[in-house]
Length: 469
Image (tube, rainbow, N blue to C red):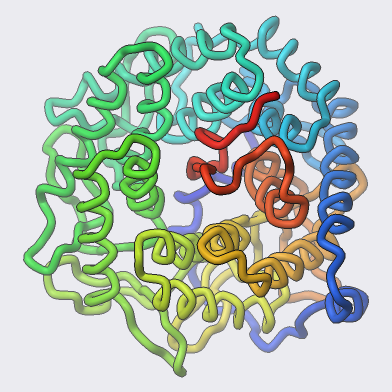
């Protein structure tokens, strides 16, 4: 059955109610270890060993299932109840390849080729299906060249295109029936209409079919054409009317990866429109959303036409923006915003899922193995190779290891305010693709990746930068 799913973006919007603040920081053992000069190669080897250990438990306890529950040793579906699509397996593939865990990688590829099929009479979330499965299959294909992986990515993307084609404005509905092409849920948001360009663009390059990138770009342009006079967009939009359905401009919930994919499309495809839009949107955020509370830079929700603050929450997802700002030429602002999340990491050990920016206190107790802080550090580190970003990421790694390691893998946390922190019982699929890859790329500098050419999707699937020998 489908239990409490760890969606990357939508779940955070429902959080509310402050919880106790002032928790202690890094566990003592981790503090002592972090104070020593780093042996980056050894740290990379540690990440690899932990990933392999977790993979072995997934194979033993949840093989072919979407997600493992590492405390109980059970499994759960993610996309469609009763139809597991090997989510964690697909998400892990390019990480396994980068780590040179070749037997495990081939084991996963063999499962995909024999068992992964999409002719399912059920509704799947278009956004999540694209970033996790289409992206995972594409990166695995780019790693090993197996044409079956590309064919499966194309098959799935063709099914997702039905969600775009059903809208008069080319804005994808949130859900599509993978078998029939029926759609539902037109009430959507920027992230769910605008996080396709990188996967669809790479798929188009590999197949020679321009429809994919054209559909992705059309949806993004529709929203961008409705920017206000101050350059902001509302985060919520309707696939049928084509109009915004809220006044809130957001950098995280409902919106984050839309902005990532503007810049990523420039880096991957040299699309000048995307570059211009990215820089215009980021400049508008800095000018009209940035606020200081107790000296820290935050980007709370604001009215997209006036810039007036409409909400005082910032989620852990927002950490990505520090890296994106650095990538797009706003390095000082990126470092400034990273300092805010660094302060939260120092104060709470694990960055809270949602934070009241006026008091820097948590608004929720649970958290889901979130990777955005490490993501930002990687993007900023790629800019100048400053080891301070690696040092911050090492703390993030050790904190996760100290709090989230369970009997059969790494788990989400049910309560970050207790000591020790109370564990949940779910390893989200993105853990296999995101933070473990971020850690390994920064610490090990693996030979199968050219860091100077590396482009990752929002799910950290490698879409450019593999080195195949």
